[in-house]
Length: 303
Image (cartoon, rainbow, N blue to C red; front, side, top):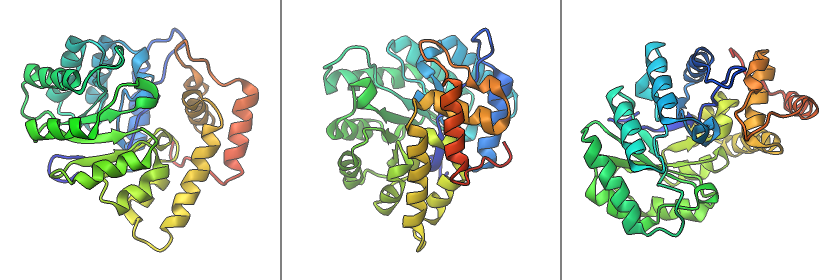
């Protein structure tokens, strides 16, 4: 973290659920503390956190429980972008009040084909209603899922109007050319995170801030190592090794695969639970995934 803007590696922390499908704060606190020990920040309520399977009230309660459990909110970037304006305001204001370093905000994503003007108006309204000078917003660009995103011109307009509040973006487009177009603008201290560690080396070489990646849930230390040592001679080899682990996990549905991996390497089978409509990996696939990872000398030390 430089000044009041985040950089480095963050994880969209997988959300544990109890048998009755309620969130499990004790397991979540423990997982967040482990990630922090690996020098990875916390993008709780991201896509791979099953964020849109959680209500606003559940997220607020979990934020309170994380803070009360000693999790450092100064290393937290919770997802707070909702379809309803008032939900975004409520959750974003609460995150700012708790001292979260930033919020990761989807655009309102239900209505498709909306204009840049409409998205700008939504973010301007959230910022004005929250009315907190400490608020730092990182835009969340994930058009493969949301189908609503941020054009470069819209980002420039937001940064120009709210230079102390709109401070970065997570680009999960999967399109390096799109990321490069953001980096080329060189907005003042605007932090560009890629949505996969597969683009981490390229991002760092072009002035990026790091990555916010699903597989940082299970491979945090190795991803952080490349972030720190991207100028080293072995950076290309590190990138290839990261890609190998990511591709192994991505051979299965991502969220159930992440949870199966945490369950396997922690010895805590409760982690396999997902909220419907998602389903956990079956036993055969879970065993195959664990075998493939162990075959690559993969480990999660300290979990």
